[in-house]
Image 1 (cartoon, one colour):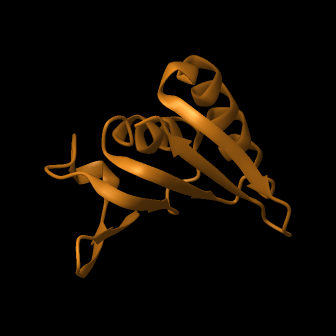
Image 2 (cartoon, helix red, strand yellow; image 1 turned 45 degrees about the vertical axis):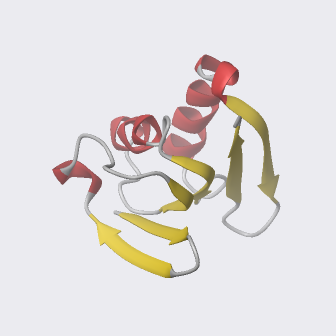
Length: 101
């Protein structure tokens, strides 16, 4: 599941199942990923982010090993797209990815 937020003098919240889409029709300020925690599912979600948003939040980075493994691989393979990334050190952990402009 992906939750999307855009702000162009308005807010729009969308709740989508990432298994039912291949790409986004728009560019978003923020995409929040929380849903499929399988390794392949997380890679699919992360690949949907390419050229789709300014910032992404990935839930459960510390809590679920497959999420961390897929996220680490994806970051390593897509460094050319990423401006910065960091982890909020909470119980479950949230990975924040800032994309290059």
